[in-house]
Image (cartoon, rainbow over all chains, first blue to last red; front, side, top):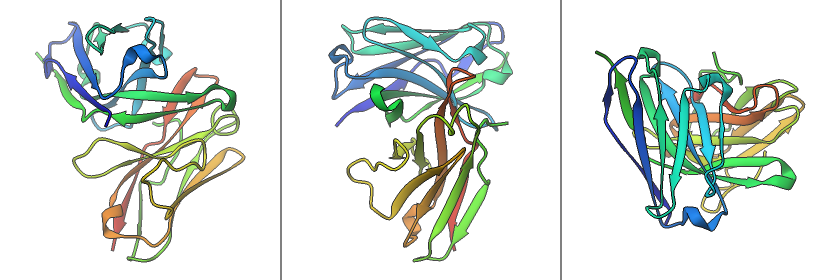
Length: 124
Length: 110
């Protein structure tokens, strides 16, 4: 059974950097069969995809984050991480990590499974 | 304001059929596939339907997905109390270059 678990501080100060990690069990990031993504739900808003990373370290980000996000991978720990710089109160919300499956020929990709999510509050 | 538009709520009695709509545009649903996620109270989202109408193993066939033009739908037949949850649609948007989601629909079993 594949499981993902987010970890990291639940509180960040405005203008500082938010750092989260996602540890994967039951699957290997190094297999190359999937992408690994971060998704968030800002307080009072809908779900927002942040970006993805592949085993090689290749990344793709949601342009709406204005280059504030950085996702990295550590295959030796079977873990991937998110750094979000210059945070504001608008970045407060639940952050999820998820495994992303895809079928290139069909232009289809989906998230399964997701981690339980971790609440991050940006406040001084 | 979510890119994909869903009704905020839907309800039905046990055994009834409930349909949730997801409205998009030519740059997302009109061109790409649609996925549906279920988030039970206090739990993480799980994929319910992927690639418009595909059910992962373990998802009951009471759940079905469809797409027409720039809209998609999720149907729940034989509604059960355990179906009370939030449901989200999602698709890739070619203009925004990002995966986009609907705002979510809260399903209540009366």
